[in-house]
Amino acid sequence: MERPIYTLPPDLFVGGPYALAPSNLWHYPREQWEAVWKRVTGKGLRGAILDTGYKAHPDLPVPIYTKSFISGQSIVDGNGHGTHCSGTMLGRNGLGGAPEADLISIKVLSNQGSGGSDGIEAGIRDAADAGADVISMSLGGGGSDAGTNSAIDYAWSKGCYVIAAAGNSGYNGSNTIGWPGRYENCICTASYKEDGEISNFSSGGPQITWALPGSNIVSCSLTEAYTLMSGTSMACPGGAAVLLLIKELQLREGLPVWRSASEAKNFIKLNTQDAGAPGFDPRFGLGKPLINTIIEGLINDTLVWS
Amino acid sequence: MKTLLILLLLSSSCFAQFEMTVTKQPMIDGLKNPVVIGGRVFYDSGTPKISEAGKIVLDTKLPLKDIIVEAENLDTEEFVELTKPEPDGYVWTINTPGRFRVTADGWSPEGRYRKRSNITLGGSPPDGPGTSPSPAFKELGKKLTNALADPPTTKALKDGIAYMAKTFTDDVPLEKAKKDMVTAIESILLLRQGSSRTKDWLNGFRIPVQNALLGIKTTKEYREAMLSLTEGM
Image (cartoon, rainbow over all chains, first blue to last red; front, side):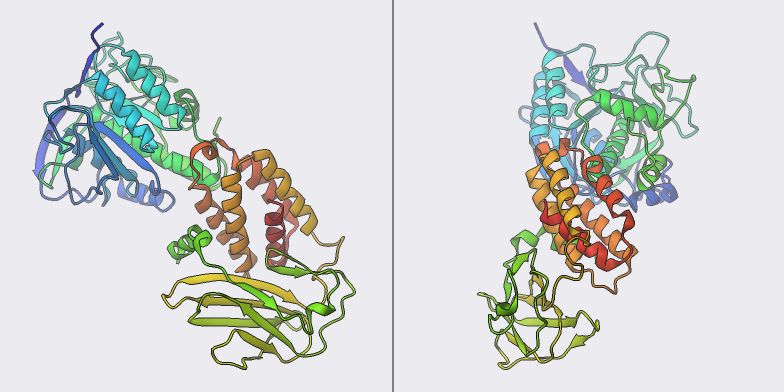
């Protein structure tokens, strides 16, 4: 049986390149996030971006590990999607949510934006073996793949959290979430806008875990400048950053790390702000993560873990 | 400062260590059943106080550029003057009688910090057997770490807590000591790898220890409790 091809969601290029990033990004409000970064920054942890690769940028660290699973193409990002996602996860100077985490960059999508599920399966296993703490996949396709799902299980078994984008197919009542985001052992991420409403393009369905900022996201471009993009692809690395910070806290506090997405979802359920329809809803899932509440709760030992 | 502290903690196991010993004449001969635990000399009560000048000898096989040796009289809490017969030697003389806590810090010619040693000379331990919290904390450390069954983290915490506790002189405010200890513990726990990451050190160690420390009122008690804790780990 032929294995599915996964691609970039049809993210929207909104604008740029800009020579300078705004000093106050809507998705990482400076005052709020500087308080977070006083406590946790992702330092000592490794975030893996499985995407179109990596291009050097003043606000990105040199990856501690890279590998390309695309035949004939190096790790160098010829698309821009992987570099943009890397910036949102751990870009320096306020661009990323986990600004001191180390970067693992694995190319599983070509510069044209597609890749076989065999490469994605191998990329997930490779990232987990390289010590990734969180794997972020802003990609998807229409079919489940046993090998990819098995690799995701493998990563979780090593204590590596796996997050994927829901997809950019909108929602009209039927499930529009792509794979591997739809896989039950994945943290599936939807997108919301600056006004707090769900992004129109954001896919929906019963597997949505949570929603993060995904519209008009400024991050790194291929030209050492900055571009503005919209998509659940942009929400996913933001969620990966939050997971890196939570994991840093878990390790510092002495807590055991999660071994499955269900454990993570139990935590998320208790520490998100409900959004959309009351309780779980197919667009926001369990809601929006309350990063300040999470940090504050840990500082004061009032956080509810399970 | 915090970075330096973490670096010191992380690399403490790599440090070349030197042992601080005391010449057998006249002090050790006067002690009953002396035993060194965690760098501190304990011995049976009834040991007479030192009544004549003693010597401190640093037994190091490595050349040290700068060494600071200090002796604090445990009764007067004053530091006493030491003499050094040979400028380049490793021998210091205590010229007054009494009970002393001796600390030594040294640096290699390359400027690397060497681990601090800390021993107590003369007299019995400050709190005699049966009244000291030490045995209870030692037992607690043993019980908790046995239950967690995580040798790599246990070893790292044992070294880190002991190292940090020894830096707490009596004049360090208790709250500062506790805060510094938490920072040290969290820095070590962050480095857990592999199966160590599946262990619940928060509920299996930190909270029980924190509860046991509730009655501690002074930095001295805190230091001794934490050192005893590490002895059981």
